[in-house]
Image 1: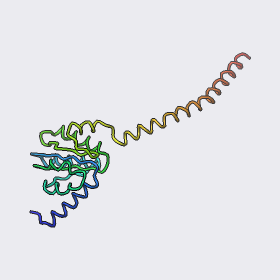
Image 2 (image 1 turned 60 degrees about the vertical axis):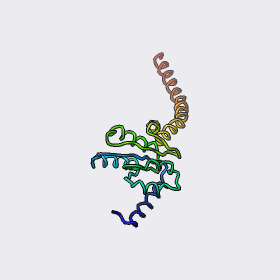
Image 3 (image 1 turned 135 degrees about the vertical axis):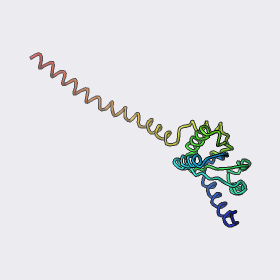
Image 4 (image 1 turned 90 degrees about the vertical axis):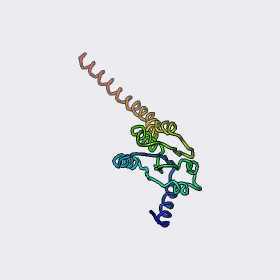
Length: 176
């Protein structure tokens, strides 16, 4: 059993994680093997998210005074939380895909994305959105596209002029 000091330290760390995060997913699990748990942890780590199995009482205390307080009702039974400070779309994609593939082991309880409590259906909808990086690359492509077209048009004029002059020179050479 943990001492009061250890519990206070865990509470402090958990509170900091909630304050730094912009999205969190609360999940439950049963009959999970170490390999499956490690697989989920690794997938979340790859996308820059944190994953922690929590005591419900400590989790409820940690969310007090934060926007995440809205999900405190879901801290019942076996509880784990995935946090992210980055793009919530990537976290949603990872969690929804993993829970779909392992539905017999993991259960989605609630999510919190951009100030709103979301259910699994909404998480799946968020997961279908392009990530922040994908949106930025599409925007840059759209911004760059007219400039590329203009450059190719500007280059086409001298190139076509040279081709036309060469054709005229070839015709004159044939006539002589």
